[in-house]
Image (cartoon, rainbow, N blue to C red; front, top):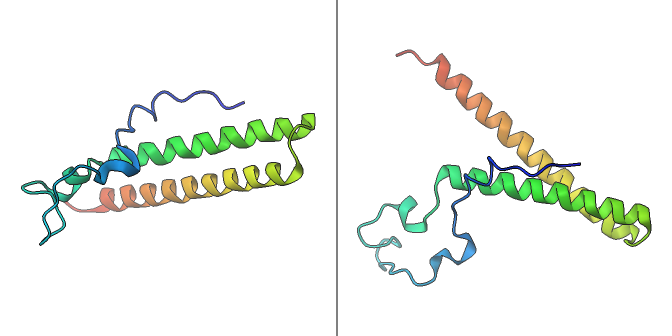
Length: 113
């Protein structure tokens, strides 16, 4: 079974979809007054990656639970298929993201100083 991940959740510091509420945004630039765009939303690169990883792990856990419910007969086939397909899509996204990060790292290591 999938174990609880502690390291990935510590990276997640995003404030979710409600981060636009209550902020003063200037009409000319769409940014908060005197704040850089990344700081205006409260999102960081590590926070976004942590959130994506946490969501992927949660999708895999949900698919596992739904699969066991299908084996026990408490979930119908459609629910099991939907959960497994969502988990597969999350896994494919995580693999693609990992490949891009590794490729970027290899490109950086090839740069001359």
